[in-house]
Image 1 (cartoon, rainbow, N blue to C red):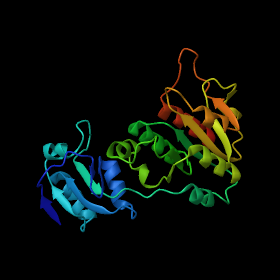
Image 2 (cartoon, rainbow, N blue to C red; image 1 turned 60 degrees about the vertical axis):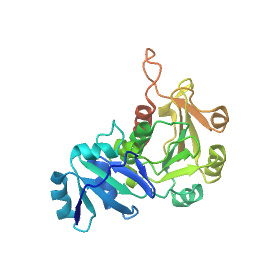
Image 3 (cartoon, helix red, strand yellow; image 1 turned 30 degrees about the vertical axis):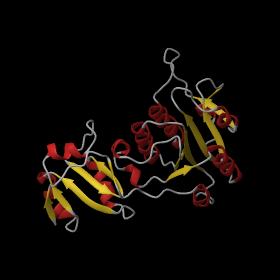
Length: 250
């Protein structure tokens, strides 16, 4: 079923959820049974394919300029804007239960990383290298958004995300459940290849500006660094995360 475009809404969220955009993010969300789909605003060209694949999808046909009006000015939507629900995350207890029989696995923790596109890129790397879940602190991390989903290129749909109130307390819970806590620190003595990969690992990455907070760093069992050229001060946090997760997957 398809309808004509009626009225723009310039926000990236709606009263019951959010608006995702971009082909990969939208197509993955449509295929996720945990997403409640309200409607998909798309161009007539995109509607041809969508009607064949998803005949029961509520389609609203619009031109690209009208879709532009629905989204932030910098959004690259490729002719797709999906109104849908947000995903429910895991609790820290559910994550521990999910990994209880694993002898070897890794999860990633972000301490005050606030850029949605960086987080989206990190989600994509987590999915690519088999990371079990991503943990963020609720008040210091952006909520799910179209920009984050676009940067994640569809992988947000199958990577569990745990939002916690108190990050230090969550780390203590992980320790009690057999995780070894690894902090990434550019000034650490040991390189990342010193990590024992045959273990349950929780890797913490801090913000690009200030790194991990003192209390979080003190909770680490070990801190390690990436061995980069001394002429380069640091890497973007999403790039650094990709390198670390690749190293752990080897």
